[in-house]
Every structure is written in C-alpha cells, then in structure tokens.
Length: 312
Image (cartoon, rainbow, N blue to C red):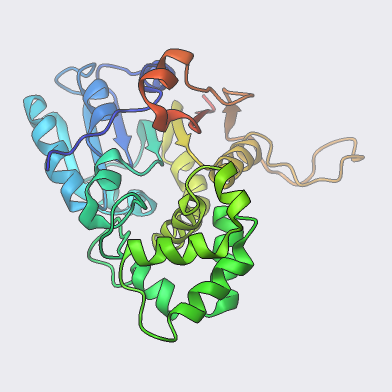
C-alpha cells in the first residue's frame, strides 16, 4: 500500500519556520514526508534536512519521496525524544528549525493491518514502532480494570470510561480480546444506545486512548519539549501541530515556561531566581486550519499549530 498522508496546516507551518536556504531543519515526525518535501525544496546546496520517524514504513516511503534532494536529506529511524543524541551522532548540535506533526498519519490509520482504526476488523496492534513489544493487545488484555479506566478516562476523555473498562475485563475472562472488531463490540455494549446515536463512532475515544498509552505519546512529548527548544539556534523556530487537547496543553505550557521561566513570587520587586527567558511564543492563540482545508481534509478538524522562537 502506498504511504499517503495529507499534510495538515502545510502552508502555515512552512511560513512560520522562516526557512533559510542554508539552514539545518529537523522534521521529528517525518510520516509520508509532506512537510519535509516543502522544507527541502526551499533549501540550497548547503542546507540540510534531518527526518526522524520510528515507523519503518514511513521512513521507506519518505525516503522515496525525498530522493530528488540527494544528500541534503538524512533519515533516522528513532523517536524524536532522542533527537539530541541522534543529531549529536552525525555532528549536529544546533538547528535552525524543528517541526513536529503529532497526528497519526493517514497511512497508519488506513493500513488496516496496523490496527490503528476502528473502521477495520484486524489484529489489535497500534504500535508506531513495530520493534517495541507493548501493543494494544497487551494493554487490552493485561491492564487491570483500574489501569484501563485511567487510560480511557485521561487519554480518551471518555465519559463512559469506567463502564468500558469493566466490560473489557468481563469479556476477556472468557478468552483474550484479539481484534479491533471484538473490542468495538465490547465498547459499543458499554455505551448507552441513546448516547451512541448522538456522538461520533462509539470507539473513537477509547481507540485514541489506547494508542496514546501504547506509544507513550504524551510522556514523550512532555519530556522532549525543553530539549528541543534548547537545540534551536538563536532566532530558530519550533512548530508543533497537535490533534488532542492534552497534547496542545503540554505544548502551550512548555512554550510559556520557556518564555517566562522566572520562579520568583509575583510580589517580588525584582527577579532573584536567575532564570532567563529562552525566547518568545510566536502564536498567542493556536493557528487553526482554514475552512478550505477543513473541507478538503476532514482529519485536519482538531489540528492546532503553535510556534516558539529562540531568543537571539
């Protein structure tokens, strides 16, 4: 299957990266290479793009797409949380711009064998990096009822989390839950019929929650943001596209903290903590997709772009 991914907020992201023809840029979530292609096409001979992704299929497809740019492109199979070390190994300490597009790619959702989507009946997987051992199947069959409740409530913001967790635990007493179709039926039975009719697909929030847990998505993001900002050259920018309110909250908080890291009590006349601002938040409010983009790509619906610029 061809790796397809419609890059969300593409023009807005490229504009805000302020690409220098001879600059060094990192795409920490390479995916199908849509954003990277636009970055690379603006680079001259001395410019460089490092594409990072933990998904082997993504790297392979993006490699083909970015082939015309030759040795301006370096691809690394890793998680963006290891970007500092990975770039250090190829002799790069500071970069001019960083991009993170935190959405699951269309390829991952549509490639049914990967088990990301509730639309297909297939194996429970959801691993972005297929080298890791923890999959959705292990979570669904191995987590306690309380752990499942926490994951579905916190990461899915699902109001019926308690009942869904209970139904999952009851169902697996008979036999392990092996497929997305089986999980769909269990979730459906746990949500009152009148509520199923009102909202979107009944499994959407629970599948999202299990995927986030499986790939440690929020933990990775939270633990990476300060390091990524530190990697920027003076005037360099980091652009982050989120698709989930919890992701957006983490990014917003980290950008604000790096802009104003002072820990002194508000009533102190002068700062004595010595914490110096790392830069400025470019986007006071997140940039949202245009009406045209929403009409063309329904997966852009919950996308938000935030931008931070390193101090000169």
